[in-house]
Image (cartoon, rainbow, N blue to C red; front, top):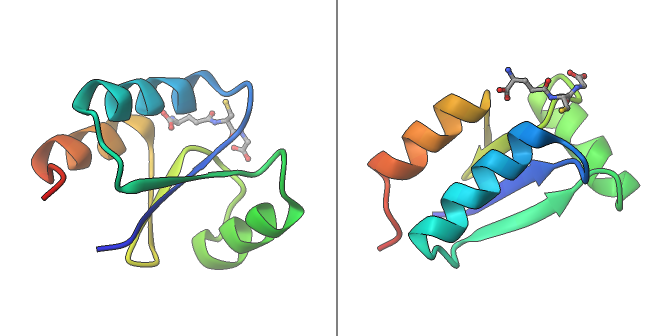
Length: 79
Ligand SMILES: N[C@@H](CCC(=O)N[C@@H](CS)C(=O)NCC(=O)O)C(=O)O
């Protein structure tokens, strides 16, 4: 399963999700920063339909909302 987390550098909701990833010790989530890459920002808007971060792409399907992302990460631990 391919996991990509779109984040912003100063976004507190993103930091919360990234903390959960650290806490779980996950190495299967690629971080895509939209402030550092115009390409990441373009892909987020094209696929997700909005520029809001955080957004987790699960095999290319976007999941918005930090609490929903944390819930999903807890339900789907790294294999
Ligand atoms: N309820 C959302 C709030 C996310 C949010 O407000 N993100 C801000 C950055 S801190 C954002 O992306 N704002 C730009 C936008 O919504 O287009 C969550 O918990 O994920």
